[in-house]
Image 1 (cartoon, rainbow, N blue to C red):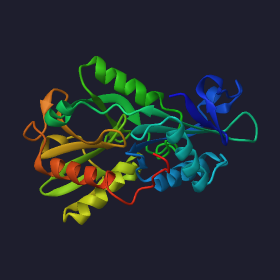
Image 2 (spheres, helix red, strand yellow):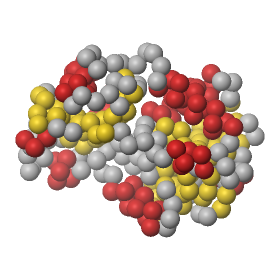
Image 3 (cartoon, rainbow, N blue to C red):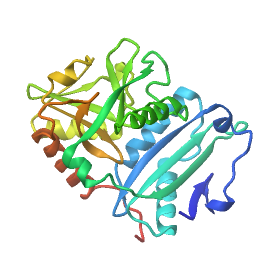
Length: 283
């Protein structure tokens, strides 16, 4: 899309530039957030901003924009590009000196194929391990190459997603998703202490499940739990709630999306498309 936000201004993409000495470019010293807008509404914008600020505190990067600034930036980018349904990426780098660099751009929303939700994703267990003791494990940092390598390896092996274990062999997360399992009527997801990113969609699903009367558990998850679960699904800002029906070539549960997954997907879609989300003016 033509227009983007850079350090407080809307600029044309072709003219946007950051310093060649920006530490985000040189060292991956920075953070990012992927957000999604629905009909001009940005889902849980405040939660994305809070997570960015928490990560910035870990990396000692000053955040150069307030929540209101971010709302205005989102408003400007969506309006200027005349788009309502989009994937938005907010990037914060440590800059080249004392000042941080903030970038926001939108991309056309490319939904996952409906067929994928009907049959479910296939995943493989990655050789890449998540270091749960690292301060970066809970930060959505620009050091994202391990995730990309894990996902590319999964695709070479004919799968849609990669499942990462932590250094102790417990399940952590997907390369671009959080993991949920349905076990004996309970909804189980790896704890944050397992080296998991505190996903915005993950938290929304936990809240929806609790409101729907499901018992939710955040704990260490053994790899063997996948074969014991009646259902498995993944969550993310763009994929929303995605069934996972095969792991390493073996079916999970019935091998088809289950009733809990379908119910939570329906509730999530109702919530993201309902009232109460920040909506830019003029769209």
